[in-house]
Image (tube, rainbow, N blue to C red; front, side):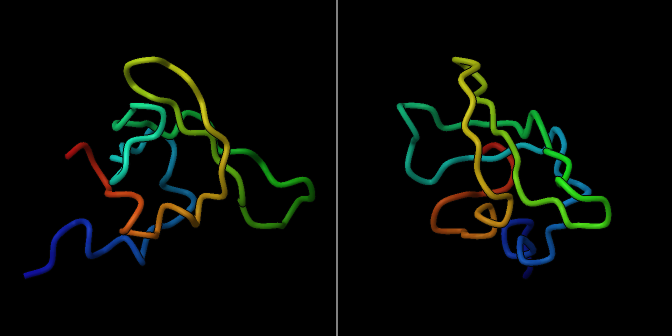
Length: 80
């Protein structure tokens, strides 16, 4: 049986905005996040590299490379 979390390797950068994520290990006591910003690349034609995650409860933000979300030891897709 394949779950949503098993499909994380096919995650596409163009589908990130407002996607929901759960930190496997809480970040500053925060566990649930939304992708609040997908940063446009510096040059036209380049791929998206950076996103901003926003903690649901505190609204604090964290900038990171979007590919880090593929690590299922750190992030789970959806709110778990």
